[in-house]
Image 1 (cartoon, rainbow, N blue to C red):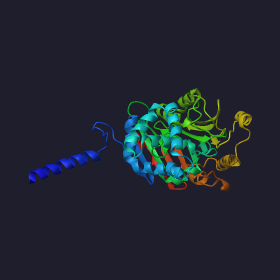
Image 2: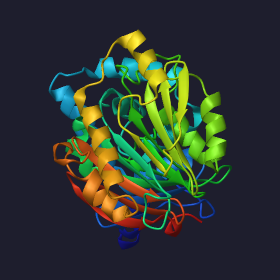
Image 3: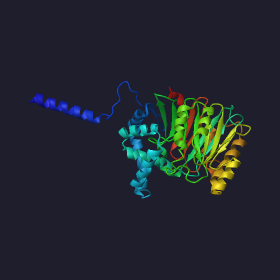
Image 4: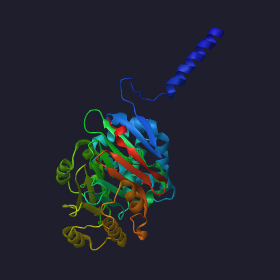
Amino acid sequence: MNRLILMLIFGLSLVLTACNKDENPASPSEPQGELYSVGDIKIPVLKGDGNRMGRQLGNLMRSEIRELYDLMVESRLRSHRFTYDELLREADLYWDTVIPPWMKALCDGLSMTGGLTLDQIKILQLMDIILLNREACSGIIAWEYYTDGGCLLIGHNLDNEEAVSYAHLLCVTVFKFTDSGRQFAVFGYPGIFSVNSGVNDAGLCVTMNAAPMADVFTARDLSRPWRRLMSFEWLMTCESLDMLRIAYLDAPVALGCNYLAADVGNGTCFETALDVILERNPDEDGLICETNHFIHHLLQEHNRAYFGDNTGTSSHLRWNNLVAILRDHKGAWTMSRLMDQVLQVPEDQGGVMNSSVVSFVFRPLDLTLLIGSPYAIEPVFIDLNNYFD
C-alpha cells in the first residue's frame, strides 16, 4: 500500500511539473532572454528568431504586458470609447494587410507566454497608433559648435497625453536576431513592436514626430505603410545615416511625419507629407530642431494647399523655444543639460515639455543613452554597450 501511494505521489508531481512548464519550452541550445534594470527602467534583452524573442519577452515581462493591456485597452473598453469587436475588426484588417512577417512572428511568440491571446496582442499593436496625438513630440539634433566638445547628440520628447497612465511601464527592449541584421534597442512599452524611437549597435538613431496632417497613421489607409514599422527594419539593416537615407527615400509614401535620424557624425530630418519628402539639413553651426509643423517652405505651401493651416500654436511655441535656448547657450550643451534645461522644462517656461511621457538624449559616439519619463521615471544613463554583443 505504501509503495502504491508513493508511486501515485510521484506520478502526480510529474503531471504538475509538466503543467507549469512553458508550453513550448526552449531546448538548452536555444538562446534565452535576460532582464536587466537601470534605475526604474527595465531592459529585456531578447535573442533568436522573431517567435523565440516574442516568447522570451512574454516570460520576462508578463505582468507588465498584462498591465499595459489593461491601461491601454481595457480601460477604454470600460469607458465605452470603443467596443472589443470594433477594435478586433480593425486589428484583423491591419494584420492581414499591413503587418510584416517579422512582427507577426513576434506577436505569435508573445501570445504563447505573455498572458494575452493573439487577438488581444493584435489590438495592442493597433491601439499604439490609435492613441497617438497629432500635435506632439519635439526633436533636437545638435553637434559641432552647439555641444560641449562638438560631439553629436540627438534628443526627443514623445508627447502623448493618452499614455500618461502607463508612462511608468517605459522600457528599453534590445533585439538580437540570430539569423540576420544588426542588434538594436527600442524605447517604448512592453509588447508593442512598432518603433517611435530606437538605436542600433552602429550608433544609428531614429525618432519621429507627428506632422500637421490629421490622422498621421491610420489602419484604414492601408496604402501607406507606417514609418514606425519600417523603422524596426531600418534599425535592423542600416549601419549609417547614408544607408538610412537611401532606404527612407525609396520607401512607399507615407502620411505626415517629421523623421529625425543621426549617426556618429551627422544628422538630418525628413519632412514627409503625403508623396513629398524634403530633407532638412542643419544650420551652419550644426543644429536641427523639429516639432510638429513643417519648416521647409515648400512643404508649408504643400500642406496649406491640401489641408489649410491646421498646425496649432503649441508646435510653433516649442520650436521657437528650442531654437532660442540652444542658440543662447551654444557650445555648452551636454546630455544632462539637454535633458534638464530643455526636454523636461514646460513649454510655457521656455522648454518643450507638455504631455511628454518619454524623454531621451542619445550620444552615438559611445552608445550612451539618457532616458526617463517626466511623469513617472527619473532619467538614468544607460551604456548600451553592456547589452549589445
